Image 1: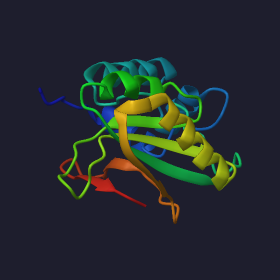
Image 2: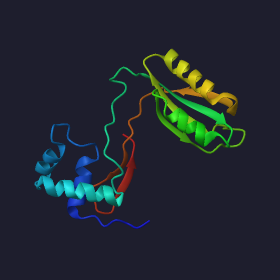
Image 3: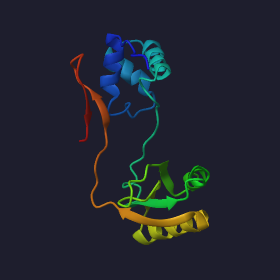
Length: 172
């Protein structure tokens, strides 16, 4: 993978948007004003950063706790390897699954290879959703568990500091 050359404007855009775009009608206009740049130039650099893969995506990430979805369960499944990709696609398409992915097993300690994050307003709903997944997986499911969240952790990903050299991973 090639390393991207970032201009000073690119670095300023990244630093100013690490916590998200401004929440307003014209976020790129607000960002341009904040940076003292033309909106068209900021948008062009943003598109270039997306094209280079420096920025992976621009997306809305709702706060599910504020929406009333306070019960979170990571459902883990031991699914036959020959079926896991096909079944994982079906599980990931369920409306109550926010994340679904394959992970390697770890011997007898961790037999699960399919993970699906479930959110609900009540713990019983999470359990009911897990049961729906169990039915969908059928005979290909050899075991499962649901791991409920015990505290809220804020995820932030990579952060670029003011230094040109330093990039660090943070968990605020």
